[in-house]
Image 1 (tube, rainbow, N blue to C red):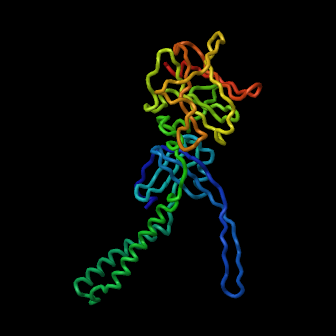
Image 2 (cartoon, rainbow, N blue to C red):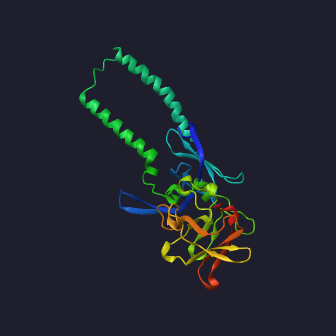
Image 3 (cartoon, rainbow, N blue to C red):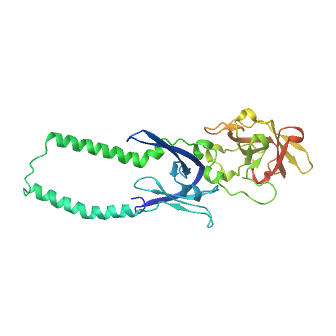
Length: 323
């Protein structure tokens, strides 16, 4: 069904790849009881689709194909079983993975093509009295109902057991309503040009990574009009370990003459930075505001830490916020 049936392909990303082991113990029950434990490797890939739904693929093939994938990928899902059937990398040089067909499966399909017409013909002859089998007894019906229920449960286990316990945070869970397309922003290709680009993450030591977000990347629910004498810069922070390990942070606007304007409180109608955006306390976002001329040519300065350990990064504020 999955290899030959219809599927839907959408954008997505890889959240994590896992490699582990599984111990299987087999014992022989004839004669002296002897047990042997064999360790098998296990592989899985977990990701999400553009709509925020998460998926998991188990197997070494998918694990190897998605090695190093950090950008947008194409995720194909069976419209019948709702399981992932193919993963395609975002570059022609990347490896792809797809569910492989089985010769035994096709043999079984051929057997069914022969068996089902025979079954229909037999039942028709029975109903017309050719075979006098009599009516079904109550016990026969009960066994039939139990068999149908057991078959339905087995089918559910085959289709959904892998994702039934899948509890992984998607981009929407992590970034809330701050970003218009969180998958595209997270999975963006890193710019190799010198200097820091708007919309690109930069390392800030123990505080993790910071990024200034272009206005076009923001969700319309977090943007609003501010005063003509205010610069409001949307900022993201992604850190490991939670807020307890953060160094002190200072934001400034630096003019061409090296004069500096310190950050101030944002208007109440703006989400102030840092605000927790979703389920992870290590991911924060919001606006950093300044009482300054939004048309002046200035750069944004971030100082994380103190003394010689401070990490200072400058951004082009012209491309960030018109006010």
